[in-house]
Image 1 (cartoon, one colour):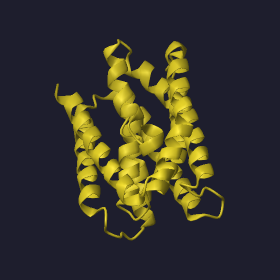
Image 2 (cartoon, rainbow, N blue to C red; image 1 turned 45 degrees about the vertical axis):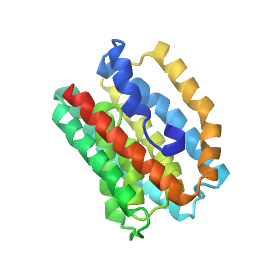
Image 3 (cartoon, rainbow, N blue to C red; image 1 turned 120 degrees about the vertical axis):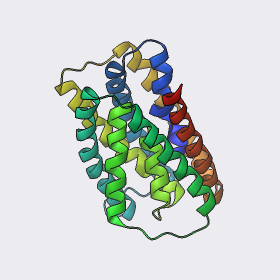
Length: 234
């Protein structure tokens, strides 16, 4: 789902693994490391498939770099906050934002939006802050936010994968710098499954038309928002 829609990896995997007894501060760095590898691999395959253009002079590459820069700011703040305070209220807010974004894409999928640089930077900062805090929520915010800012559905998935790979690398370094360890027994099966799925997912995105893809992204974004809210309330 992550490579196909640019979302859902950490949002769904984190609560499942928490139920198996892993602690959040053990789990989140491990998921971030896995997404660092799968994110860059996914963006490469999306680029090769023509879903996104990540050559140096392209608009997609400039957007990806902007989002990566904004993500560094957000993840640096998020790592420090994650170690110090409870996050249920923030998770509830993020879940609500993700749900509204999904509904908005469905309603406005035929509209044309004007791209704004400041929107992209703010979006990346908020999404990466939540990523560092909870291990999830980055993809739904980034993918849906780009679409609502004028980026195509296919390009937004490849761009999100690239920016998230960079964001997760920074997050892992910061967590390790604060003495938080990785669960290697968990990392190997998680990253293996993610990498195996990437070629099939990118081909699926290539075959879908833009309108259908936006509707699918809208539905999954809204569902992941509701799932995030549900996790907080139960």
